[in-house]
Length: 351
Image 1 (cartoon, rainbow, N blue to C red):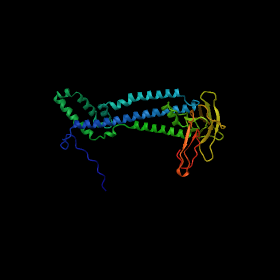
Image 2: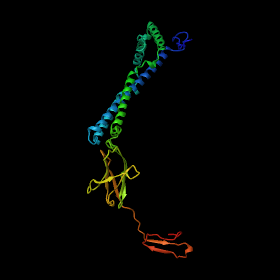
Image 3: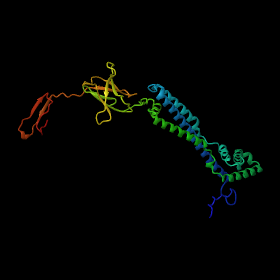
Image 4: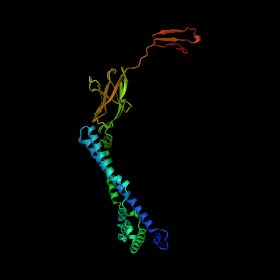
């Protein structure tokens, strides 16, 4: 039974079997490859650190928003937290991420990375790079040139036995990846266990100017009509979806006049048979809308944003004159009525 054949070993650079390959070009190509791997690993490490820091920061803020501050963090506090997050993340991006994208990896550092995995180099690759920096001094002496050429060929031959992709240490990437996965798992577990949604707190910090309410056990969503206009003389119908209520907890609509004459008038909301949205009309008791109003919904530990209803005067038509031109078969003459908007005529009449 034959064993699998080993991969062929390339002939030594500079030998009769490989004369076409310039040792220096080969060395530069392998160093470029090593530099790309080092840059990719460093970028990955820096990005993972940024993600871990941001996620840990947001999670700490969410806990404070849920349990340490009654009613959740205020807008000014959230703006300050957002500003701190942007400043720190921006500073990190400029000081750490941007240089990795803009600047080259030092070839000597890439050479050291390669040599750490293969003792056979004996610092030959680093010495070659240092000698090449002072090529004018080397080129003036024949013996120095011979030493340089010999070191060049030996270093190139050593590089043929190196897989550059495996020389870069990725252990730090793996550890940071595990840490990020652990933090994500903590956020997911907290989302399942906690009655308050941490993602809502994340949004309140990332978008402090947005109209996102403090996380609560009870959720009030889909409030309709929201901010709207309504005609004078008619009540306003309000509905919303409410989830997370405990037994015995009620849903109440509170409305106030914009001028402050009437404050927090309560109207109970209920779910009609066969429905799923809580509904109510205000003003209650057959009263009609006579002024601009503000309203909100309270249920359990949750309060919806405050919405506004603006009063509009319903349009009216003043009828001055209506003329009727009856069909010929009726034999009726053309007629007219003054200030009468109640239109009544036979079918086919032209009005």
